[in-house]
Image (cartoon, rainbow, N blue to C red; front, side, top):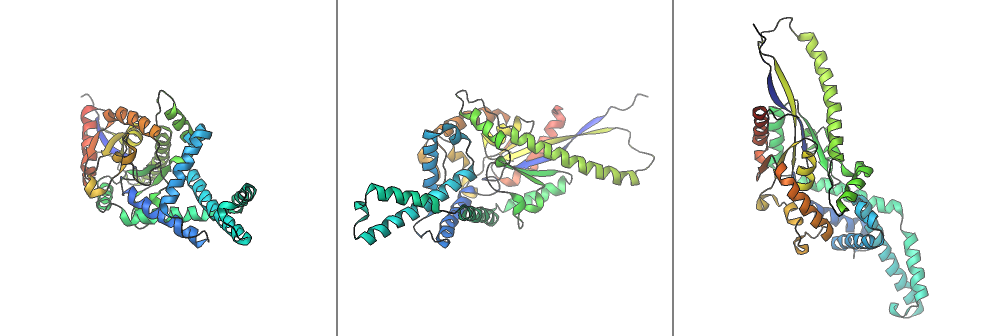
Length: 369
């Protein structure tokens, strides 16, 4: 008799998630984290007149200045770098204004009457008086609050979703891929136990810079692949370690006989879940992932991503620093990504069902790569 034909089973191997506006509402998190900017600066003696809107405004101003003076840097500067610039600028302004007020008081005159030489010297002094360690301390406080706020506001049903996924797919490796500063492994009370790794855009500056330079090109032919390729490499190394451990365990318990008459071959599928057409769907699909697009119910989830990437500056949230040029490029990338959406969800509770649907589709279509 001819040997039975092998059957192929699709199994979930890698499941990756975007974080901001996918697992929690980023607008609320950033507003709360930005409050810490002002509070921490005040604690270091930089006054109570620095509020979160001033910091966001400073970021926008610095982006505008960089666009005019150093377009290449404006394209590739990271979120962390520009936040540090904004913190420094805000602190320097406080020192500068205090210096002018003190000199004017000593001289018995108005600030407006001070000579340009005095103004220039006050500005020079302010630029050298701000400590890098204080700037870093403010940034650290902001990042800490960002994680604390995310834990407070993580979408409630997502925890049950992770529990169900872990129960139904016990061998899955779950990772995060994000362009922000969040890391679920630091969210010890909510998300940490469900994630195996996190890939951050800022971990690979060369890849990030290359992408944004391509995005700025007139043709706009940019593909966000480097970060997803890095995620796949991380998965493959973790899967190899797990497989070797499993092989050692199974070699001790495997029977010398087998009752199976039909050989089965498993194909591991990668699914990425995110709310951003360009960066989540387009980037992951370009590297071979199936995708679940989170076009979430706005009233229930407070999602802001779709509202951000229009050509209307007025529709941008208060914390957004995206330029009109970036918005126009993103619209092009969004349109290009739409055909690569595998499933679209309005409610996060649908993720486990969508995973099952994608796996069945892969088996039916033999859609393995």
